[in-house]
Length: 328
Image (cartoon, rainbow, N blue to C red; front, side, top):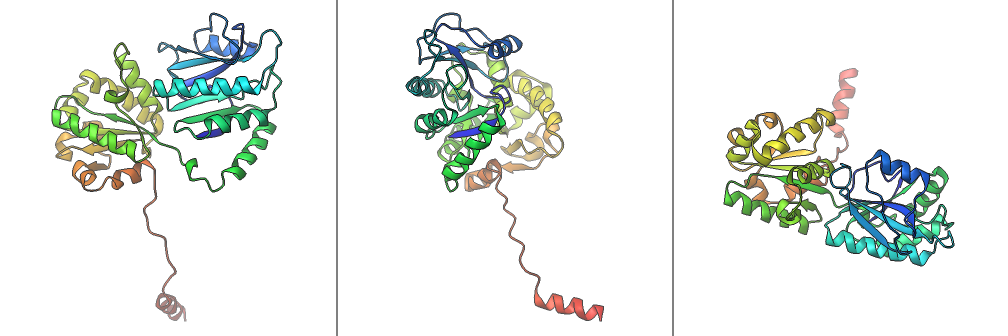
């Protein structure tokens, strides 16, 4: 899904952040400044014109796992081409699918030094990236360009149901009990089948990855976090033990920033709610595993933030008449 956003690609968390460069590997002054301020790796070598080189941020930048350098400007001619932008977009799709990237932040490549028209670049993004399942955020710093393209996007997609984003949901649980592990796996699979980008260690964690950093990144990027609480989970959370204990410290800090009314964290009681829920979550409203087993829609309503309250109807005539008679 392609979305237009006003501002900089550094404004929000993502899996992959894309930065423009030339085929010689050189970058503009603002890109250089952002690279240095955010401790990102440099391209390091020439990149063929129209190609994307992706590097790991190696946990030095907490808002993204990868930085992609897009050679959108030909160093020989200091110009760009729509064909190069389209090829970069194809490279982006291939990398994102291979590395489970569900959020990508990208500027309008080639519209600065490259001299391309912003509308034509956005149209190229629509053709290549517009129908992908992962979220592509096209960031535009210029107010006038943003308003021009936002109006175009609103008209073109006014009735497009695909504008509903796939919510990113991280599932936190304990590995102690095999029955819990199996149920969580089935839950994550069901959520994915229902349009949710369910993030699970058994899906996305690979050998060699830094476990604490991966958990931190997922918790930060998630729009919702499911805490599957059995007795083992509650013990580890309360005692700050193992991976659950690490996640608990991050969650508590994030909850303080979110405020009292935050709905990001959802407790799923695997058994008795009072016994199996960590102390810091006992005051929160939870969902029973049994209720989810009966109907997963009860959980999906919370994830997609659907208001289930009935519409308020008209006041009955007899009430109006009674109120009138009282006044008389």
